[in-house]
Image (tube, rainbow, N blue to C red; front, side, top):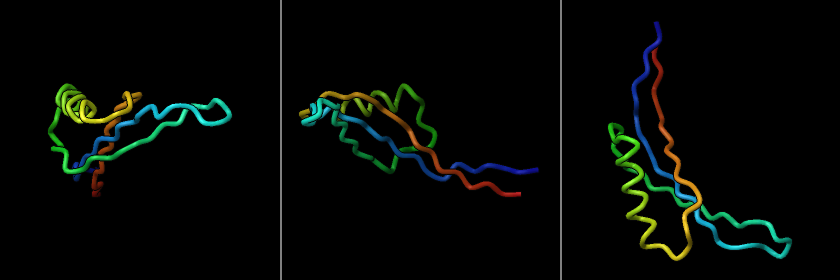
Length: 72
């Protein structure tokens, strides 16, 4: 039976940086590592909101990326 061990997590925040010359949205993304693997979605959102308050551009998305080790 395979097992999964959560190794690390990071937060990616997307920012609306305006429009390009073609009128398409420019999304700038920043990643923040060293996120506790036990953090709840509410805690992730609160942290992202606090980080975003220090930025110039408005937030368009908040994602969490987990890395896990799968053993057999």
